[in-house]
Length: 268
Image 1 (spheres, rainbow, N blue to C red):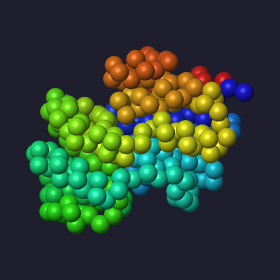
Image 2 (image 1 turned 135 degrees about the horizontal axis):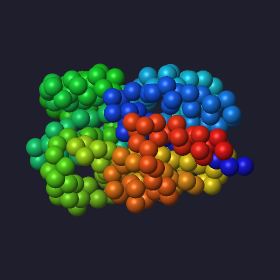
Image 3 (image 1 turned 180 degrees about the horizontal axis):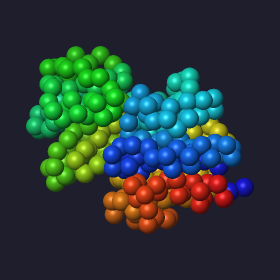
Image 4 (image 1 turned 90 degrees about the horizontal axis):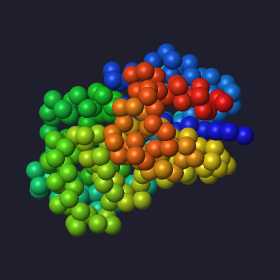
């Protein structure tokens, strides 16, 4: 039958360098839906942040789905009904946050669809606007009374690599750790990754692995590309993503790579 569903990363893959959806991308996604195919945003962002783009793509309709928090949440885009959710428990999340803060890390926490931070900074304000999520400021992370979806720390790449290495013995079995960009390191439930969220939704829809395409650019996309029937890296992907992909495109997020994938694989 060919490919029936496409899971695409958002930032650096479907969005161009201005964080915009192009007309070609919108048209390709519309054509895929018209042909009875599925296109799903599979992102590290919150579902609240993805809603803005899903509306532009005509995805807020019956039988449309999204995968957010790097596979930690799968949901219906119209009803916002959660089909699968895997947060960190409160105690573990707070332990990780406090450990990172003691190391001097710059911390952002996703909990109850809010961003939680210690104090307002230009980066915090810009990040909040970028993802469309409000920020709650707390001096004491122990005051967080709910489960935590993920923790982000920002900094130079080499500094983040050092933190990841130094915390590995402390966090072993407690969380999963991965880069979502060169300057962002993320911590989530140890069983969360985009491949797992993609597999859950594919199984839920009765679509076998062989009929699944995944497209991405960053390290948090690797599991998704490996677990898909066809894993595709855009030309601007980091080297480890290209190494994990079945296909490496000559097109980038600035030259409508995902629209090309839809036309060349999903619709054929």
